[in-house]
Image (cartoon, rainbow, N blue to C red):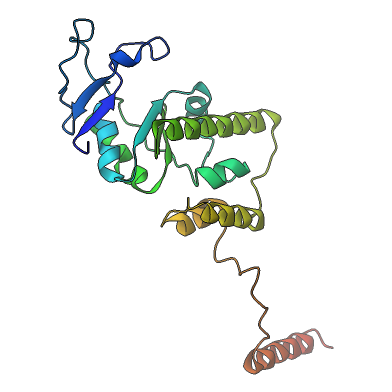
Length: 233
């Protein structure tokens, strides 16, 4: 049903709730199921408008997970950039993971903060708040959330160790090829990986190397001769 969304209720521990406690809302966030005596007074998650905005921006999505992983929140507060290309699985299955500007949770400000980023990314970090991850199914979104948490754990350990480099562009390029082969590439991948991981117009590894043109060779000889003259050789 394209007009209704299944969501968790506000104020319940997600680890202890049952499937019967899930509720149904319309695209304006209003509850539309009748419920039972045990669930009749439940209200949708306080972040329902953020979820609905993600669905509006991403018609391909069929599952969303919003969570508050402590490692991710800590990394965002510490200013650790999780958009860097650190671990292979994140590059292949998530792409670049950006961080929003801080916005008050459960507010219209928060909806605005995620609006543009979620349109082009499967996972984003909510500054000082948590994660918002989308997928083809709820399970897909959950597994991607675990990958974000893994990436944050690695980044925090690197910060403690005081060293650790991102993957070099040529290795990232190979992982982008895998991402493309799996059908996971997004339209903005080239721009994103260039900005955050240095993969900018890398040559095709299968292409033959072109020889310099005659005019280019002439320019090289002229510059070389001039340098040698100035050096007195």
